[in-house]
Image 1: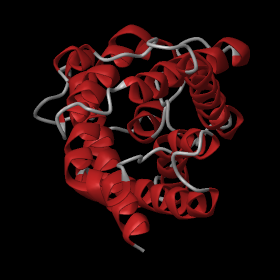
Image 2: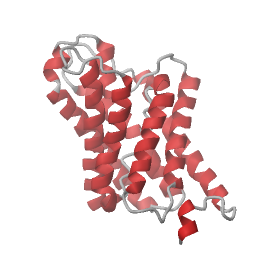
Image 3: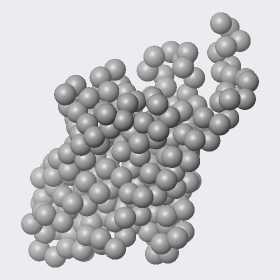
Length: 246
């Protein structure tokens, strides 16, 4: 129950803050409309950072089914806890998206464009090409999970979250223009389902694309943990600079 509640609340906060910044800069009559991609990438990094500090001790602050699957594969968490992690993550993502709709209801009403409305909740490619879109999500999530695994175990508690913030911002600034860098199945599918059931006059959840930000991140996470495991067998390969002072 601790893991479920922590992952639910953490993912809810992540999606609330992350989707809300997209609403903030894209919906008509928002006070920050047009602020652009820099605000979005930094806000998404903070959307991961803040709940990670709050819920890190309770659940490890995964907030991402791809990461949880990867950590189950390498033995960091038990397979028996995986449904609890993933259930909390998808439930939290759905609730967070509903909150964004409630908060920005009047602005959605002023923004009739279906693509803009959907873009608040879920990702989409700038150029639709399933193979290349899938590769983008695989690579982005690989970078995320490999970087998380590479955070030194002896680092000052909490500082690792700052590294993850930097990774999220870096991925967004470097790869975000390709597919919107979902790199998280719950972050995309949960809000996409919320968008599909919310009372928009016109809507297009784009289910034909929806599998890519689910399957791509899972593949990327699996590759990351397997490669990290392989390289960890090489003596000193992942030695931390902090080891010099231990």
